[in-house]
Image 1 (spheres, rainbow, N blue to C red):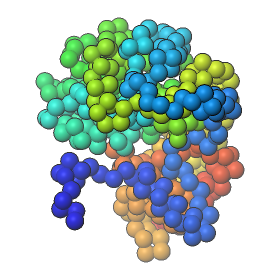
Image 2: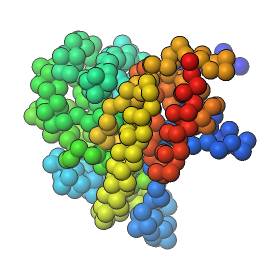
Image 3: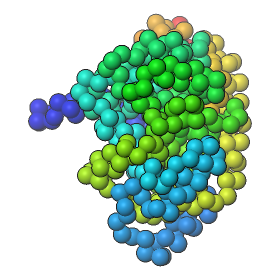
Length: 398
């Protein structure tokens, strides 16, 4: 009955990250010892004080519909955070909360993009960005940045990609899937180009803000003339180990926040009341757990980089944020083992799943077909064992 499905749905590609996670879970269910490095979520538990705030909210009967944009107390906590940590001054009416940062990104695209509009997406990119643009009947314009430029686009590349049809630029820093982080100087360079094109909106995905090993997080919204045309996307999933709570936010100009609220009011309404009260505690409470998790990720980053550099054929860029390694692996294309030939990064990812019992994701899904993504949001022991397995399995390819 697939012929009954909409053209809109049929134009979308399935999420390869979720597909790999599902395949690895199927093998686990068969009793196979799989080390899962495909999932982009912290392996830590939500901090106790945040969980306690959720319990108190349940006892206090926060169990009714909330405003579409979220409780005022949460939006105030978010504006306080943005001013204190990022130097960005918003009012609570310039903030809206959604069911994860993912919904906030999609809300923005659906409110901005008309059929035929172009959205610039630097590659490597998070798998859902192009699909969201397609959902809005827009055209993703992919601007590729290879490992030789640390997976970051240049002002010259941005200038060349902008046309009269350009509606928005999606920027993700720290990046999923590469872990690259744009410096203040690099953002100023992009902003200088954008200043010449005042109708282009910037969607700045900063969900990995606190998993940053290079110093203070920088937002393009803080660059001259960018504040009123930037939508900052963030949330509690990564920094506070709250992926399942589904609570993200967008902060930006009144007209765009109002439009996002109008859209969200028609298809999900406000996010979970309990998650909102938990998120309020996350932003207002102690930030010590955030720093402890960041330090653990930094240690794991150093470990996986060291081990990856010992694997012949891997070309490694040292990530400055997030919890992903994105090595270039095209050295293995065309090689074979056990009758299996590696033609693409996705082939290599499935080879490693079946032969090393380690789940990674091919870079094809991220617009970088010469790389694979490994999440090091797992224990040191798992990282060491996974990299040993990968090294041994790759040695069989001739």
